[in-house]
Image 1 (cartoon, helix red, strand yellow):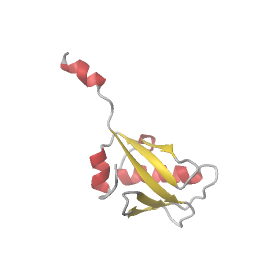
Image 2 (tube, rainbow, N blue to C red):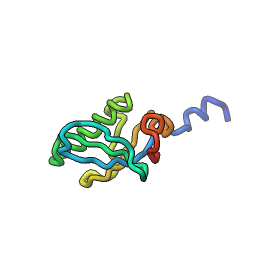
Image 3 (cartoon, helix red, strand yellow):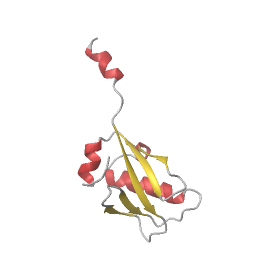
Image 4 (cartoon, one colour):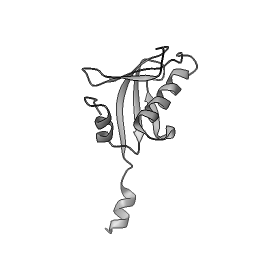
Length: 103
């Protein structure tokens, strides 16, 4: 198999991690990583109509210096525990930003 074909078959790089979100937390910020490796974050938006989830995705995109469309919520839309996927960023890139996170 030639090299160009192998490059086409590679899957894009992405990182997956858990976030515990506190809506109506007063401000948009990442509080750090808990002992169990979950990212702790708060947003000022209420948990109504997806506002808190949207604020979280914007916050994470800003913190990781990626586009907003690269950050996706894949589980936990109605709970405080979220599963996030960031396309175009390796697990090591996330771990470098937040040491101790489980990716």
